[in-house]
Length: 500
Ligand SMILES: C[S@@+](CC[C@H](N)C(=O)[O-])C[C@H]1O[C@@H](n2cnc3c(N)ncnc32)[C@H](O)[C@@H]1O
Image (cartoon, rainbow, N blue to C red):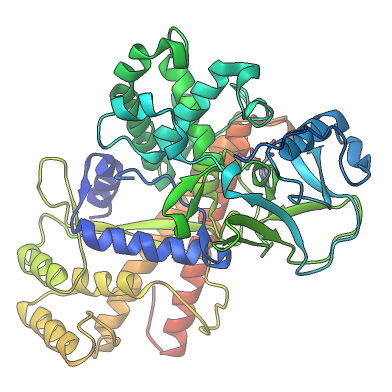
């Protein structure tokens, strides 16, 4: 059955989800969780279905610019002059743009207190899809996403060059080759991730970019005066990936936006800095979550994002990311004589299964698990839905299934809220999950070994970005799976269930 599960895991890219509505709600909830600290803002993942110009331009700024970390003062002062010219005198008095190991970043020019507002950017300066030239918007077919519209905005302003009202911002966007999102990886690089959900999501994202390009191509061709003579797919993809790595979802305005200056903040997974949108003042604000001394790098959090999302959306990973997660695929066997009944039971209790592209039911689904922080059983363990699915998989008689349905009706309608009454059945469920986790750990350990082998003799700092990112993703998944396996073993030993 595991072999079947593996085959099905590999083919999932071709499938579509059942119960789309429920998925949408789950994504909404997840966004809330991922970006919960952002107040009325949230960092929106690219999930495909997924001015006031001052009369005088000030050339000097109101505070001295500290020369921290070899910060490129010229670039900073140009940028701040531009902000002034756009009426943003009040935007920033404590930060300067500098260079770090991770590209441009912001440094404190003076001590900053907890709760202090460090940045304010007005609605006028934000780039939203409605700022695309009307001529372009009118030509676009329905269904072109906000991501694509912002990508078109970038392309149009790049073509305008110095004449663009956004030129200093557009110049700071990453040049070709500087983005390491997995969508730019070669096939052999992506193969390093073949067992992971990131592999599938990358292929899906590339397909989405391809089809969005096909939708906007006639418009690009009709408007050479706006975009230039020939916009290639590679150029559109670069703009699209740039949007994925920088755009924010503004719930209050129900739109996606690029926010100049906020773009310079690098991400720290331990940071809880607040970015909020003040509807009354119509501006976005960043508030410091801790004290900084002069010269410190000031960071924010892009959300509680696992390495798989960081790699796909932003093109980087963290070596020990506390928000890592792994998708565990579980599926009913085609040889299971109770398959039909089990599917009916799952669907009747809001447990969707994934459909193949041809409409047939895979009988399975992926379950996201996060690192279990406390193996001793306190706090969250593995997701309830995964345990419930395993219970259904292990049922061996129609009567057992009817009992599960009856028990669900007695509680909140969800399956298997309580452990199985029979100890041997509960042990069977736990053993199935443990075996699944262990096989995934082995698979990933082998993949990690292959990566280290390819980079043998090199210091890890000299590895290609794709190799070190793939290693971070896989190591994170192994860590999560090991924590879940340890938690299961602990649960079982405290319930005196024998586990193999
Ligand atoms: C919103 S931009 C931040 C500013 C960016 N460093 C720049 O040079 O413009 C996001 C990009 O910064 C880089 N980045 C941000 N935080 C990082 C981190 N903790 N580690 C590595 N790269 C990071 C990634 O390249 C990411 O795509």
